[in-house]
Every structure is written in C-alpha cells, then in structure tokens.
Length: 98
Image (cartoon, rainbow, N blue to C red; front, side, top):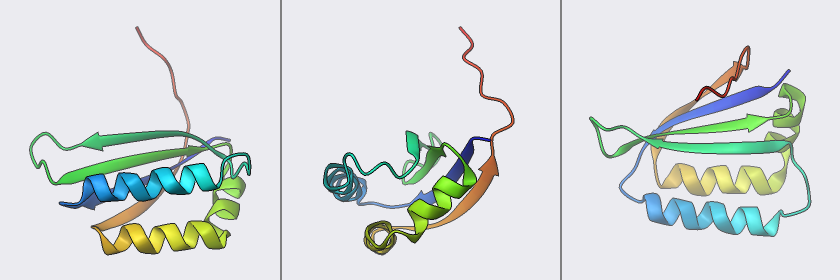
C-alpha cells in the first residue's frame, strides 16, 4: 500500500530549505529510498505556512528512509529552519481527474 507523510510547517526561509533538499536529492540520486513523489503546497490564507506531501512505495520504505543517517541529518537541518509537525497516512485512493 502506498504511504504518504504530510509535513505541515511554517518558515520564512523556504528558499534555503529548498536548496538543502535539492542538495540531499542530488547526493542520494540512485540510492532509492522509496520516495516516489513530492508535492509542496503554500497556504493561500497564511503565506508563511506550507504543506509537504511525500509519497512512498510503502510504509516500510518510508521507515527505511527515515532511519537513514542522511535523512536524519536533512530533517535536523530543515527543522532548524521551520516550525511544524509530521502526519503519517496510508493512501486509500489517488485518482487523476481531468
């Protein structure tokens, strides 16, 4: 079953966070990790608030990714730039509607 982590955070340093994330992605290219899709959303009513949706192949893949020391390092770096929480969700349906 697909798995999604939702990270709800506030920051005034989004560009810095995006640079850190891009460096992480480049450094870990080809390692897998189970992350298959990322969506970043900005709250229209609160421009400093964001939601990041991270889709994984499975809960197990997400937990393996979370246990990776490089992921832990990134989470600490991003956490220093923001305030927020993480929510874990099983994906029951994900349909493309046009």
